[in-house]
Structures are given as structure tokens and as C-alpha cells.
Length: 481
Ligand code: NAD
Image (cartoon, rainbow, N blue to C red; front, side):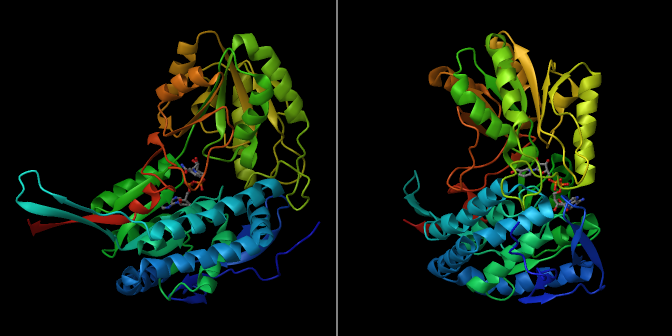
């Protein structure tokens, strides 16, 4: 096993251009879930540290927001180049603190890095408008200006990409930022922030805080008058709490929340193409993805063959630490997450599902075996919750209309998957109540595409040209015609 991580990853807060300990002096442990080993003690941010971060971002805003777009773009491009050169180190930090497999970590490193390039390119292409009013009495000028201080809150499952998907557009737009990563994965966030420092981001423009407990410190930052934007990725439950907090001070909120992705395998789907893509949709990031396929509705004519072939693939999965680069399934982020997955499977079995493959915790570390459940019925608990682990739940159906109805029977609406002849699949895709649909593909994320959900999966879009608009406010200026 190779290791690139030095003995001293960054374990401190970054406030006003300096790495520093929290004012209270406390730390929390960062644990490698594959081994249970404590790999770092990370500084706890007190509420005073969070106040300092907001003040630093507020003080840096007037200057940063006035920099030329090309200057901001150059810094983002420099960060892109550093991350591209350090891809393996970037991936290894994620392997260690998150438990990812090496292929998942390296894929995330590449995806995360691309946001800096994409938004370096978008920084210089922010659109405006200049038109004549219908009555001909005035010119309508619309300018787009950065909102102000942006608070960016990220989850543990994609600790790099969720951070860069927010930092890059916020910085490109001219906002100053405070990043608050998940407690499980602060090292990746600290590394990304340090890359931005090395790329030349000025003092106060990027800050990093890790408050424990999280809720009160975040509420206080949202209530600060300088904070004008919240961008949150995480569970719908926490998103709801934060939206309420934003309401009090009318803070603009972008929300990337939970999913419960349906997969519809149509009667004439070609299983040679479908199986590898379905496997990727389920097993990418060990199933710990908001986009992970959660419920497989498979037409009865293909059901038996689908189950046999998926079972064969899942039995061949190599599970273990991502430091062994041949393993394809890593650990869950913690024993608690592993136990959540285990109890979902136990309940599914009690409700009548049959374990075809897997269905068990592994002896050491936070690992859960790649699992296939057959005989699941729509409405069973496992079809109502985000599994967030390597468990494939198969439901057989006879009528495509029923499959569409079942797919849409959820409060979530992030992503759906459809497999089958393209014309029919497109027809079904248009009827899915989700922000995104992958047709005959297992993975759809792309920095150039608008990522986001409908229903209770979110508000707003990240990536694409829409991503930067989330950090810009329109200003209408009326001129005499
Ligand atoms: P989570 O909601 O528990 O935590 C997300 C972040 O919010 C973390 O930084 C956490 O520390 C913080 N947080 C928790 N409680 C808070 C509170 N009361 N006030 C302020 N901040 C608080 O989510 P998680 O377990 O880290 O991540 C998994 C969830 O994220 C899943 O539901 C997944 O679907 C979702 N997710 C969504 C997307 C997307 O783009 N839609 C992407 C990745 C993950």
C-alpha cells in the first residue's frame, strides 16, 4: 500500500488568511472508518471563531468583489492546476477520512478539480442585459453583482466535490466565503482551502470553520447581517432547519438535499448495456451518494435475468480499504452509518425481501457487503428511505405506467434512471418528477450540467452556467431612453 499523506495534514481553522487553533483550544477526532484509527485531531471552532470568520469575509468583500473577473479566473485556474498535479494526494486524503475506495476517490478528485476550471471559464462570461422598455420610455439595464458573504455547508459523502462545487462559483462571482465541512471529513476541506491559499486567494476571501456543536454556530452565522447567501448540501431534514433560519433574515438559500432515486428498466432494455450502468448508478461511492440508485423497478420479462446478472456482478466486488487500490468497495463513513444500512436491510427482510447476495456487516471496519435484495415491494421501508449504502433493492413490475407512478411516489425528486430503447426512455424521463434523469447511463454528474433537485430534494442548481448565478444578484438600472 502506498501512502502520500504526510504525518501532518492540516488540522486547523483558516480565518483571515491564517491557520489557527480554535479559541477554546478543543479538538475532535478524525477517524479512518476502514480501521477505526484516529488519524487527526481537528480544531473545534467556537462561536467567537465563527464570528471572526464572518468579519474577515465581510472585510474582504469590497475589494474581492471589485477585482477583475479575469483576476478571479486566474486564481481559480491556478487552483485547478495544483489539484491536477496533486490528484493522488487529494484522493488519498478522502480515502483516509471518508473510507472511499481508491477508484471512487480518484474519480471524485478529478470531478472536484474540474469545478475550478469550469468556473474560471464562467467568471468571465457573466451575462447582463440592456433593452428598451415596451413603452419606449426607458432603457432597462440589468447588471449582476455578487451577493456578499456566502456560507457554504457540505456533507461527508463527497467532501471534495461538494466543496469545490460551491467555492468555485462563489469565488468566480466575487463573493467571499466561509466553508463549513462535515465533521467526519474536515481534512479534505482544509486541503482544498490550502490549495486556494497557494493559488493566491487574498486574505479573508476563503475561511474554514468546524464548529462543534454545529447547529448554534451555524444559526448565528446565518443571522449575521453580512451573510447574504447560504449554499447547503446535505440531508433534507437539516436543509429544512436551515431554510427556516434563512427566513428570519431573508438570506438567499441554495439547497442540494437528499434523494431516493428510482431506476426503471423498460421491457425492451438491453441488459448488456443496462447491467454495467445500473451497477455504477448503485455502487458509485459505495452507494453513499445523493444520486445513488435506491429502487430498481425492473419489468417482469427481464426480472430474473437482471437479478442473476446483478448478483454475479455484486458477488465479484472487492471490499476493503481504499489504500489497496484494487478494492472497489470502500467503508461506510462510520460504524453508525454502517449500522443504519444494516438495519434497513434487516427491516426489508422482515417485510418479506430475500437476500440474494451479501446482507451482512464485515468483521473489521465500517464495511457492509455489496447486497442484492429481491422481492421488495413498492412501499416497503427500504423504498421510502435513502439507503446510502451498497444495497440494491429490486421490485418487479408489469405495466410501465405503474412503474412511473411508483417512481414518482416520493417526496424526493433529485434524479431518476431509465434504461430501454431511447425514444421510449426519453418519454418516461420527461414524466419523472426529478431535477435530473440519466437515460441508459449510470453516472450523469458533470460540472457543465445543471445539478439539482425538484420537490424536497432541493432549490437551485449547481454547476453549469446556472451555478454562478446562485451567487449573483440582479440589479435593474433604469435609464432614460
Ligand atoms: P447532514 O445533513 O447530516 O449534514 C450536512 C452538513 O450539515 C454537515 O456539514 C453537518 O455538519 C451540517 N449540519 C448538521 N446539522 C446541522 C444543523 N443543525 N445546522 C447546521 N448545519 C448542520 O448530511 P450528511 O449526513 O453529511 O450527508 C448525507 C446527506 O447529504 C444525504 O441526505 C445526501 O442525499 C445529501 N447529499 C445531497 C447532495 C445533493 O447534491 N443533492 C450531494 C451529496 C449529499
